[in-house]
Amino acid sequence: MLLDQETENEIVFELCQLLGRAILPVTGSAGPGAAVGTVGTAFFYSELVGATDDGEIAHEWLLTADPVTASAYGEIGLRPSVTDPAEGAEEPIELPGFADHWLHLPDLGLAAMPTGGLHGYADDRGWRWRTQQVTEAVAAPADAVARIGAAPASAFVLALGVGEDGSRPSEAVVERVARDGDEVRVTRELPAGYVGAPVFAVEAGPDGGPALRCLGVLLPPHGGGHPVATFDRIRAALAEVVAPPDHRPSR
Image (cartoon, rainbow, N blue to C red; front, side, top):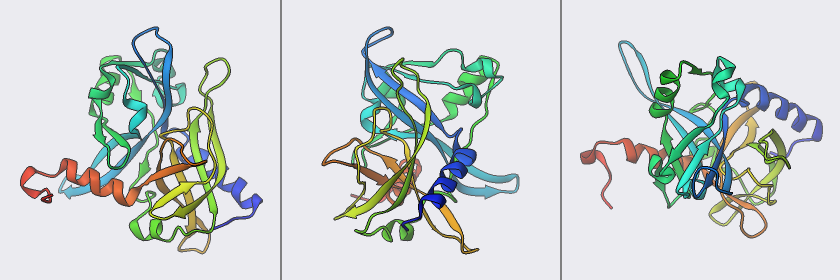
């Protein structure tokens, strides 16, 4: 769907309100104090996997682009808006052996971290997470991804950029997304820090108004734009990861 500028601006405002606390800055380097090698954005994704008499069962993941996680050492940045109390964000989460903390899905260009360790980290330091997540209801189903065509449509990227002073400001930008063969792509190369960020499009909702759908994860640029790892494939890959061995499809 290609929207007029006024509607695009309204969607940007809504996106920041609904999911501004879903994203975290990620950096990679050779070690503590070393020059930064990679910068990106990661975001929380929550999927419903079942229910019991006690309530629903959900898995929560931190998702980003796989190349962002390849360094020997990494840091997941914290923001005062995502910790309670805000003072919990004074120091980043330092992760030696950074790549080992992630599940790597190279076929998608995706890395996923189960968030149990992040919640344990917060508990040990006397604070708790205060985040928003891209939920399964917002993540685009396969038919919504399939409707992305060759004609450019409005897209929205929610990311943490890189300031001249090294700060990581929250940014929401209006872009265009289109299908190129088997790929869904953001049609323009974006600034440093955006790789790994969630990419959104809109569809007509049940009430006729625009409904946000998260298409997937922004991958590193090539060919003047960015491929997107789409949620139809992400869902299937994560389901395979968590399935018992005897329930995994044969290859």
